[in-house]
Length: 236
Ligand code: ADP
Ligand code: MG
Image (cartoon, rainbow, N blue to C red; front, side, top):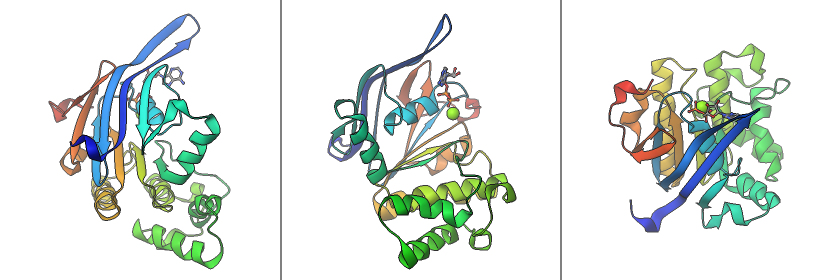
């Protein structure tokens, strides 16, 4: 990967969590880079720190040590408010648990980030409908999360993250609630977003089916990230 086009770069990132007397080191001086127009996948077993790393790369969580350069901004050197602005303007995040609002319909979930960016009225609604159509949910626009299947909720979360056409798109286990056909459709969609819009897509997953669809594959193990997945069969 040419250092010129690295839109996201982490160096020496460490993170520990303390519960009571026990401190667990989750990330141990992680180095990682991702570039625009590519889908970069980090795979690794459950509990290996994938969600923690994604939260740090996206600016949601601060590391104990190390740097994250995101689109030219060093995230630890700016204020919390500036990090929030950076995320709102440039990043979409597909959460592992979807993080949908129980009271909002699918259409309203997708409209929300557009409103935060100042897009309102018919233009916002047309755009939100188009994003939901792109994930095959034209027939579920007015359904709330409790009325949707897990896979449908996941696709709403994806449409919401894509709606503002973010420069950086983070996806935490984006296929975990999907059957293999829907999972393949979702990863093809994320790959298409990277290629068509020049988006930096970073995806973490324990799902080995994603490996064939990624431009770059990293493996997370023992608190560190190394290029490539040595054995996709061992990623559960
Ligand atoms: P993965 O996404 O690969 O399953 P996580 O990043 O969610 O892994 O978690 C890595 C480790 O860090 C796990 O052992 C988990 O229990 C621990 N961990 C994650 N978040 C917290 C937290 N907020 N407090 C304490 N421990 C945490
Ligand atoms: Mg996780």
